[in-house]
Image (cartoon, rainbow, N blue to C red; front, side, top):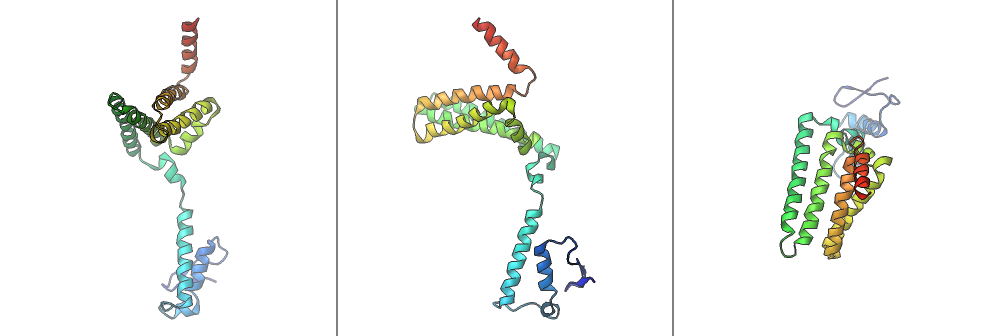
Length: 207
């Protein structure tokens, strides 16, 4: 037997795949007390129970919204993804150039380390808009680039710590160099046979 909502529309039946919070809300709203009145008076026990049930219903309905649409770049249009990729990539380049220019100022090592790290993070984040954050994370932690990813992320953190908290300029520069090397090795993993070519070039130079 169908239940009738106060608005006069047929509501879902119990056990027909309706979420528990929604069914509780319908049970309260469709009870004889609410069917023949405007609702419980403010301050009454029924009023607070109804408000709590409605809040729970709202929260569960929000959780039921697919978070994959937010984490998946395919939920955005191609023009939007391309625009944010360009914005992040350009910001990364500008941060790196700005950090390099500040390097020659008094006390510029600290600023260089910070801006260089921010530039690399922005450049890394730019590709999230092309392939999606979850897909990029899976690719980052694949076996072929796992070591480079771990070293790169550690260098991001250690560079900022050395520049902002430890105040060790030498360590900050060292971690910046390691950032460059790890990001280069990480980027080469996306180009077929690029790592093999680099290894052969280095081995031929050393031999």
